[in-house]
Image (tube, rainbow, N blue to C red):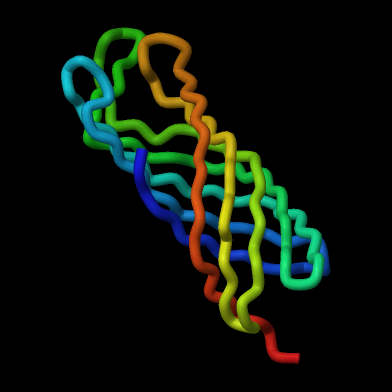
Length: 141
């Protein structure tokens, strides 16, 4: 899947913060019927960070939900629905400060679990890998 995300990170102490994440993902031709799938996830939870000079590695665990569309989601009774499902992610990454207001995230990797109906185990396990630019809005001192 390809996609993007926006996140909000509120810092409570030098190591503990709270993250809110909104992400969108899309994949084409996911099966022999050439179907597509699109997801929008909304996740929240704690982040633990360890600042080492300009480098800030972090680990986080987020829970929330995901909305699926552009696909067929079969129920056990063989009907289809447009589902909202449970979602969670756990993983980490690293930020590198470039200035007071800008950072680079060279790598973030997360285990991403969703529980869409699929007439089987109703569980999807994924690995999300990404990189990006961080715009920081530091609190006035």
